[in-house]
Amino acid sequence: MGIFSTGTSPDLKAFFEAEDLDDLLEARSKLRQLDEKDIKKIRFTLEKWNKPQAVSNLLFHPFLIPEDIRVSCLIKGLRETKNPYYVLASAVGLQGIDSTGFSEEERKAIKESLIFTLKTSGGVISARASVSVRDFLSSKDTSAMFELLSHPDETTRHNILCWLIRNAEEPDPDAFISMARSSNIPEEVRKEVIEKFREHLKQKETGEFSSFVMPLYAYIPNLRDIVKGP
Image 1 (cartoon, rainbow, N blue to C red):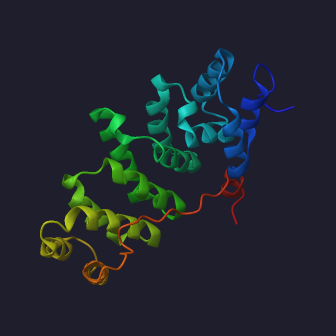
Image 2 (image 1 turned 135 degrees about the vertical axis):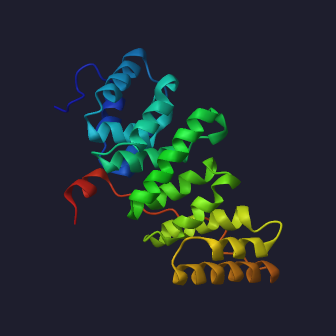
């Protein structure tokens, strides 16, 4: 019997224990309405924070988390230091929430946590964080984002550049190039960024679709794949 057998509805139990992300999505679709016992079990699971699969699954699907603790759990996940999969799950979970619904304090905490993740993580975690952070940035963050263009992960760099192009090319494209040249990034990275920006401008001028306006979504591994490693 699973760890959630007692006092847990079959559908919620299946959701908690789903190890494959496709199975998790199917289990989520069956959770149409939670009863009081299920909500209590969700609260207990998040309070204990010691069941990696169940906690991660909830962070991936935060609308199952009671509203009064939803944001605090996502922020806690982003700040997790022992289990990086919680960081990934929280970053992905945020992508399904309208960021305008957060308070200024919450937005600030989420943005700072995501930027810290970008500075300290790589691979799929930073790639997904670079998508999530876009909704929490403002023009005041432009310089900080330029500095992150030297990130080792290619997908992360692409997503950061996409945000910068969208927010820093208007009204004067030359301003973007000036900011790139004055940023504290390696010379080879600076040249590549300016080259890609000019490519973007050329694509716009010729009516082509610019490959620098859409973020890339890195493939999300299952928890067991992260734990076992290569």
